[in-house]
Length: 316
Ligand code: PBG
Picture 1 (cartoon, rainbow, N blue to C red):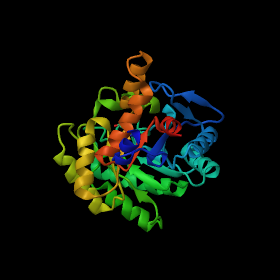
Picture 2: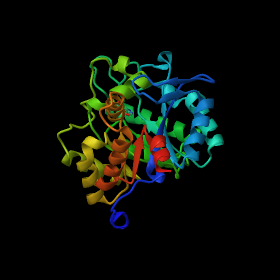
Picture 3: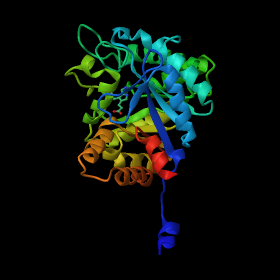
Picture 4: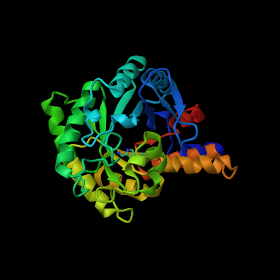
């Protein structure tokens, strides 16, 4: 009766649904483990290009590029974020050469470039993250990333009004075709720890948290209001982050707005499963495929996952 289960199966995962995050570090010819994320590496631009080709060759169509700048590149005004000749630009150029059709998504936020690890610019007297000054910087960062060759930008900062500011800046600079996938539903989650370790923003952030701009995990209606605003401001798709704890939010967004939703299976979700598997407590690959199809069942069109290339291998 396997055939009957097959023909009636409602959802499935394909390599085309997957987005691979790729961590990039400055330098050359170096590939090193990302701290806290077993099995995930960080690559210098030349090796990021090799990784991009590998990802393309297993059938994945898109990658999210996550820069890990050196500590000395971090400043209060996050100026490395708008550097069009730095290591991120170099990585994008090399990745595009190695895998020209792989869609590259850029992360728009200042956290990896600021000395304090916040996604926005901080008023050093009050410690407040200044929304409007940040938006101006994010618009500049967006132009810089469009110039580097990114196909889509994914603002993960959660400032109010940034999608329209970025859209306007892109139009003005003649980048009409660069898409915007805002993290509209991004929660102040405790699941980002390994990412912050991997990009080196954990020590900058210290004991501070991001609750003044990221959402309260107790709220779903708030996420729907944020999505409505971002769609009005010009979003092409919506990112929901984290993933598995927020399947109800993904479902409500797709149900209400009929816009493509990308689930972000974040670092803490990846690490929990790896650690359970290392202890022999779960069958990692079986749980992974179950997790992926759960995103699809909830309504997601695509999933950003550190496991993406592994899922692709399991599917072929
Ligand atoms: C912030 C950003 C975060 C992640 C990616 N970009 C979260 C944060 O530090 O607030 C998390 C990704 C992950 O945990 O995998 N711009």
